[in-house]
Amino acid sequence: MKKTLLAGVKPTGRPHIGNYFGAMKQFVDLQNSGDYDCYLFIADYHALNLIQNKDEMKQLIKDLILDYLAIGLDPTKSVLFKQSDIPAHTELAWIFDTIVTMPYLMRAHAFKDAEAKNKEISVGTFNYPVLMAADILLYDTDVVPVGQDQKQHIEYARDIAEKFNHIFCSSVFGEATIGEALIGGGGGVFKLPEPYILENVAIVPGIDGKKMSKSYNNTIPLFATREELSKLVMSIVTDSGAGIPENVYAIHTLFKSESELKEFYQINSGKYKILKEALLEDIDAFIKPLRERRAELAKDESQLAEILHTGQEKANKVANAKLKQVKEAIGVI
Image (cartoon, rainbow, N blue to C red):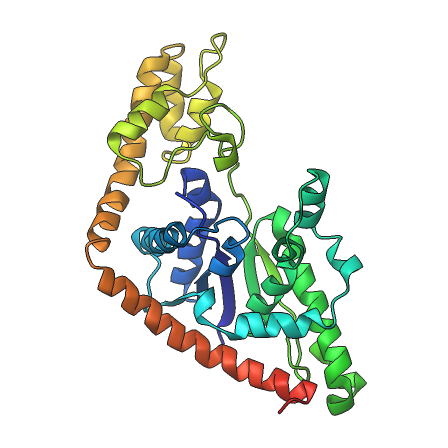
């Protein structure tokens, strides 16, 4: 039997090549492996912690579904939907709120980061792990693809599932059966998900040599135009004392194998303009078909709406069935 895989992405801006090689490509590969029933959602309610403008949110949601369709996510192979279209996510989060303590949530990385910056912390930021747990647990998720630094999110979902099963299910199923449920067996309402750690994920350097990140303003957008690419590639920081520019080479290895690049870089050692021009050609050759496919998809907004509507129907069916189990367990139906 296939395992269930779930991933959510916040609509918060243009993706860059670091996003693609760090996560987006893996989602497509896992979908195409045939080993998983994939649920991939736009985490628009999570994004509300950052995006609080109606028109901007609408555009970012549209952009994200276009991005993922353009790189190869297939609505016939994966369920693509918006978090906000599935009311069970927020309803289950409230139910979890009643059993999760504040000290427990204060250990979350996002809360600690915000606290360290002396920011006024919204309830949404504080409660982020609970909504994320609801996202994951509604679909009897087996695996969630994450980077090593995001493993805590899955640990929170597992802890909350375990606590719910212990409080509300032990009197129905018995302690022994619940014990089996907590390690992925039957009996409780929730199974415990596992992190799917994306191995060998490249840390993509930005044009300044730091990790590529929107917060550093050092990115190469995934669907950039040829003109944009030219300006960005030519501005990649190089070490004037090195024959082979480290940042240029590291980015280039994402698009060509090291065996293909080694001799070329040796022959052109110290010739930064030639090396950057070669990188520009290879990035553009990779991005151009994605850029063109995205532009074509953007012409038919009705198709995007239909894809999200179909995904909503499929996700609602699964989520509502799980929520019904939850409500029976807590005694409200």
